[in-house]
Length: 180
Image 1 (cartoon, rainbow, N blue to C red):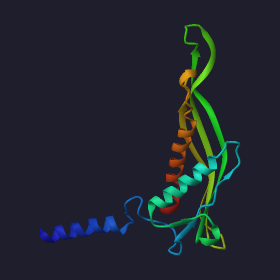
Image 2 (image 1 turned 45 degrees about the vertical axis):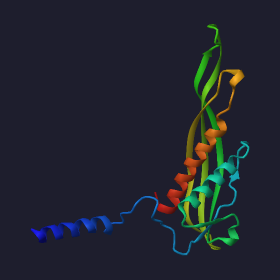
Image 3 (image 1 turned 90 degrees about the vertical axis):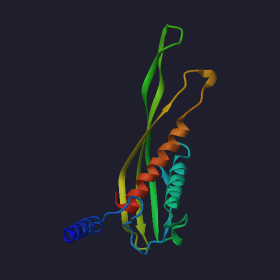
Image 4 (image 1 turned 135 degrees about the horizontal axis):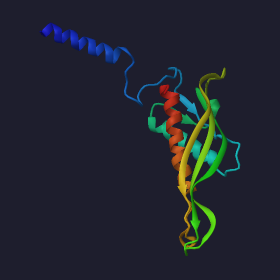
């Protein structure tokens, strides 16, 4: 009986540790030579003001939160460089308010918008610019509300872009470091 338990424990151990099992967020697929990652400001091909700064800041914050790599802005001082491009930003009304508030119909007004951001990122190693990770088709979405009350109007677009930037950074850093 003890021999069967030992064999069973050995098989379970082999399955868990022998097939690449690891806790998410701890493993990396980058070469050992990469210790410093440069994250220069992303390129912005849109007319949206500062969106590239939000996304770049979120990437830096997420890389630092992982704690394994030193992050710098200058590619010349790094082992690898993570570059990104904001390709497009679209806003689409999701919910329309067709009432004027006094019971008479008026023109439709959006009360909930969907913001969609398309990006491309590439991680290159060293002077030879060996591509370690590349994705030209990243797509992120988030919603924000538009108040219909003029007296208490507060735009939720900036908080929505901040949430979208955090989601973007988490997904990109996970894909780069862990191969997900």
